[in-house]
Length: 319
Image 1: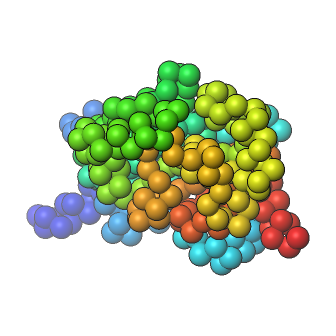
Image 2: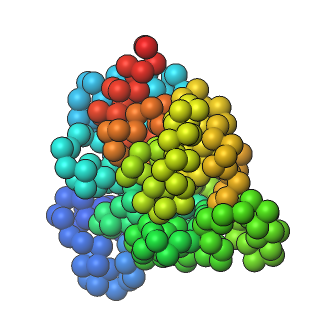
């Protein structure tokens, strides 16, 4: 008679073989073995943790490895998720989002809390098909909502989509993302409901945030939060970009754009710097200066972007 340990090893090996070698889906394996898909997912992760499954990630080029090392060393990053370049902006967003989705599959654990920012690049992560499933995850909005953003752009809607994708629940920040009066923002930040949501977001294990610039197609410009004159003046003053759609900085990572600040309800740069792993996501080729500034804030732990942007950032550093 096999021992309990031998029986467990045999089950782990069988599930791993069917999934990784035979190509069966987790749902098919679950149905055949009389268990839930979540159970199959946990067995696959246990098989990896115990060395039954060995995962090897092959970088798509020597250049990728080179830029990863250079950026990690220069900015003390734990990882750089590099996607191949694409001429189509939508395809580029999907490429970057795919690398983030794979990172989450490998690094999420049951019961973790993920703070979620707004914008197209963050939203695209939930559109990437995933076989992973976890128990007890919480995706919490890191900023308020805006009707102008639609379902794909709001942190709340993105949280719900990610919860459906990976398992778990979504927690909403019941407040507008943008308010025209800084004093009104201060009052909202003192509201008990808002404070509880932000407290949960500040306790997150992982944060997913976008990197913005002040271009005409930027999130802020599309939302109409700031006038063209305000954005033009901010660019002239040296503002390079923003984190979370509003925390502005120059190319050296220093706080900038005081006239634009203090109007958005959400996590701040200081909050992000205290979260275990903050993943900054940017796909557009125009964002290299903004990404450079974001990296120099010290709030970013993992960068997800294209190989084109990586090369551009390294050139900017040389200049």
